[in-house]
Amino acid sequence: MLKEKQIVKGNIQFIDEDGNGVFYVGKDKVLVRHVFEKEQVQARIQKRIQKGYVAELIRVDQKHPGRIKPACPIFEKCGSCHLLHMDAKAQSDFKKNQLIKLCKDAKLPLQVKDILTMEEPYHYRNKMIIGFQKDRNRHIQAGFYEEFSHKIIPYKRCLLHPEICDEIVEEIVSLMEKLRIEPYEEDKRCGLLRHVLLRYGKQSGKIMVVLVINQNVFPARKNFVNALLHKFPNITTIVQNVNTRKTSVVLGDQERVLYGKGYIEDTLCGLKYRISSKSFYQINHEQTQVLYQTGIDMLELTGNEKVLDAYCGIGTIGMSMAHKVKQVIGVEINKDAVNDAIVNAKINDVKNIRFICDDASAYMKKAQQRKERFDVVIMDPPRSGSNEQFLSALVNMKPKQILYISCNPITQVRDMQYLKRFGYVGDAMQGVDMFPNTNHVETICLLSKKAQ
Ligand SMILES: C[S@@+](CC[C@H](N)C(=O)[O-])C[C@H]1O[C@@H](n2cnc3c(N)ncnc32)[C@H](O)[C@@H]1O
Image (cartoon, rainbow, N blue to C red):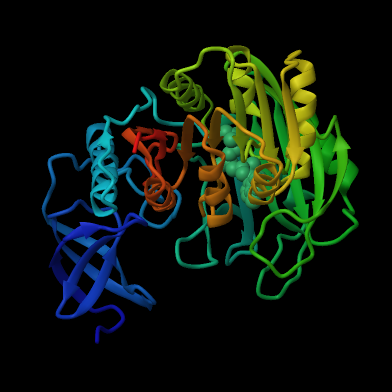
């Protein structure tokens, strides 16, 4: 058994699915961040979690050639970036190798292609969630949650955020001090401002600010909103969201628009989109265009296809390919996203697309019962992946092509193993780096039914 603060040494055996380097001290498993496979390291034990001992890296004795000095002062503490210690090549090799291992372990004979990377892999996030706390001197700080804890790590500028968004956060902190707006304290369940969510329209430059508060009434509302708008004319809407629950979920159900339309607009792949606070929108604008184009290029389309866009969000994938097919039906569980999608089709005058608000699995079951057929099914589920109800209806529907897009290759591979049992296989897996400097990667696979 290892003790807190004990210094341990080891050779990193592998990097796990959460980006932790793993080594063993006897039978004890030690997890350490910001390392490469095969590096010789020294680390200080911090705490025990279910998977093993979490340790802080204190020294690397044998460095990997791709190791660089992280360009962020809070990299060691903040949980957002995992790979700032790797140069660009090392990052893309790391992500590709993780995918190769995953496919091999799952016995999926897919050729893993080189990751499609970003030239300028910084300031790409278009959605940010910030928490607040008071420091020892009772000054308010904005920050991110530390990994494996509920502690906030203060920050000033983040390499992944658009600069203007961090300037807005800085101004929010100074307004909180000035107007005596207390940050929410999770353990005591008191204070007013829980989080601020910012959405940034990369192409439009428009910004949405969502103030998540812990009660129905926002006392200094008018002064707060006016001061923020005065300083940042790019803010086109401000929304008050009420979340009084004891939960780590950021947004509550109730919303009130304090300024503007309650949504922002942006342009993606040449089409205009309206995006509400609760709707999903891919966080990396530039790479989303790469992802969608890659998907469209993988499909063999004749113009006569009936396409299902399952887990469609605000309709962006289906809309991007609607002009190449006969008809698209989008299915999405979030009603705000579906409302956005319906408006988005109208704004862009896309007439051959329809959206249905339903659980994708329930929709598939009903579609199967009425013997509805689709030539192409695009599926882009959340990180948890799809489920057996969806997948079994899918194989019974016998689409010619399934385009599976995922932000979590682990669940994607699991689902593709299921589909393989029913003859649906692919040739290649394409990774698109939607999340540079983190250990996440988006993947895309085209599956079709093998003649049996
Ligand atoms: C990864 S996002 C993909 C959205 C969209 N395809 C895009 O590229 O922007 C997954 C979407 O699935 C939706 N979703 C989650 N669970 C669902 C379910 N059971 N049925 C239908 N949609 C679901 C989420 O609300 C979210 O919009």
